[in-house]
Length: 415
Image (cartoon, rainbow, N blue to C red):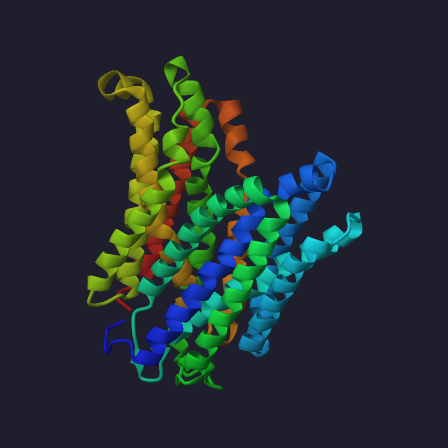
């Protein structure tokens, strides 16, 4: 994809308000996620087991609902559908301020709230990609997807801080009131986005998709490959959350605690790495599939190096210190994830058919949600097979992903 023009004023305005809307929506979502279990158990006296089920229903509705909402956005008016999602979300946040402690009412409110968020996320991603492809003026869209990832990360950090302050100072209901307010701001920004979006002559909004047969076949191969290989890549990357934590507990001597780094600094590192990646990508003069796959392969190589450091922990720790081994490994994994995540998201958008971009974004989000829910698989492997074997297996999975990705790259040539 050659860069043939710069973003015009309407495109810039649309992207700005869309990302701002996303930031406010994510702040509301993560604020409630941060205190939901405590609210259910301590706030309204739900038993811990029941609260866990209700929390899972809320998150599960968001994950599974993304699949259906992306498809509905494809066949229905996407803008009206997203506005409906915002309204569902806003009403449910406000309802939690007044809702009585009735189990089925709480569950219904959580399900509706979760589906409201599910409507928004895959369809906003489609809007973001669409803006970059105005009629006759196609522009590389990856920078926008990197900005999207940065916005989500910053919103998550800010939401956790705000939720904790509000809960401690004013109580749980203050968090829901704040989430209601941020959701309202998100809807206002989305309205501003809609005005700019309507004025653009976008390829994705045309009635007929004008793509030749060979390109459609190539995109189909890439789409299936990115979705399936992306599952393997993300499975390995996500092990930093549990498997790495328990490995640090077992490997490091004298009970050395690195949570100050894993919990305190890695979110900031992720944002810094994403900003650097954004700067690099913005300087690229072309962004064809060969370049995209090279970026993914680079991320895979960095992740393999991170796991290799842990595999050779024993001899390496004698040279540079055990804590530094894990710090360096975690830095590399965060770098790898920062490099790969937005590229995979963009690749799914770019390779999916114009008429079904929401559907396949929903499929991608479904996979991400499911992988986030099965982190125990890597942990069980670690507990049953030991650190060295389990990390070698994870390296093998990532290496297989790289081989498969290299094969896809070779098969499409220089298209």
